[in-house]
Length: 410
Ligand SMILES: *Cc1c(COP(=O)(O)O)cnc(C)c1O
Image (cartoon, rainbow, N blue to C red; front, side, top):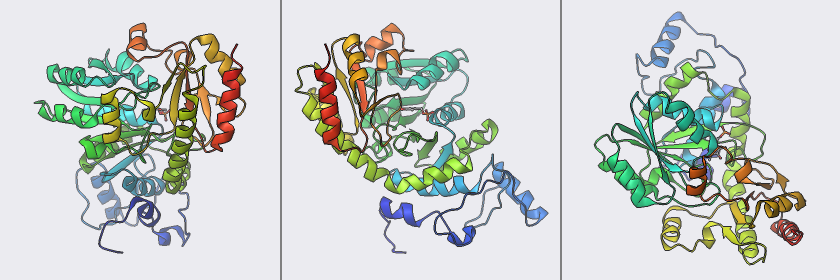
């Protein structure tokens, strides 16, 4: 091994997996066992001491496995291999969905009476957790519109018992960006030293690196780009500080929400192509969005290379390597949006995103239908919006399909 750090595409294929532990198989085997045989009673005692945090493993110590809800080889391999994909990360934990990762982050780091400051809109499931579950349990929640940096700084400054600043950028579906660095600086000035968490599902891990801007924890729905084929659910948490991940793993044992071996194995096999897929998807989306912006039916196009606000352009240039594969179009009315969804032939009308196939949906009546009227307004969600998640089809075929669907609107 060379002494300098390997680059991520090399690291994914060379670390975290020892073929001799999989009878020489060049790719990992699947270990579906629920329980593991100890070599000696002393090894069992030691494994329990370490799993429960009563002891720390020595450098290079071979700690025996116990039981698959605690840990299993496919989770260990996946966690070792996904960490180098996230710039700045030293440790990862895998969960059985994105929501499981997010909920475990909340329940690991919040205490009764804590405050969470967050950007609006968040993913619907996350908003629901904060408002409908955590708030009644005594957590104070404070939402600030995405991209309003002075409002976010003021909310952080004014909060008491502040434990978490939770950011989702770009916001769904308007792509409005929040400055992670400014938020992390405001959090660092707060006497409670809250953790800054970023749901990086939309642009990570290829195009946006929150840990390099001062975030403490990065969360993913790996169901989306990381898995990429719309055929499994998974969630991941990554951090620079392994102690944060160790605390979440401790909770994961109690919650029983570790990712299962088969899903770990599938997701692990997708990691080497994440950057390839995302690059192709982003290039496709950019070509399509920049063409459709001048279509007479499109009243407004929400896409990072088409921002007109100077501050939004500044954040994009500072924070994102590429614009990503999601855009939203304003078509003027719900009828026009529905007509478009009925007329597309290549794209499927489905929620979710990040897969190799192109998906279109109407956020107001689906993904964002749970927002209050005030949140809908704050989030910039309208009746005439459609959101597009661009896949890896040939962009010219997608563009002509979208053009014929737009032309068909009465
Ligand atoms: C899909 C999604 C989630 C939830 O992830 P699941 O894997 O469906 O549980 C969270 N955040 C964002 C931004 C998402 O797109």
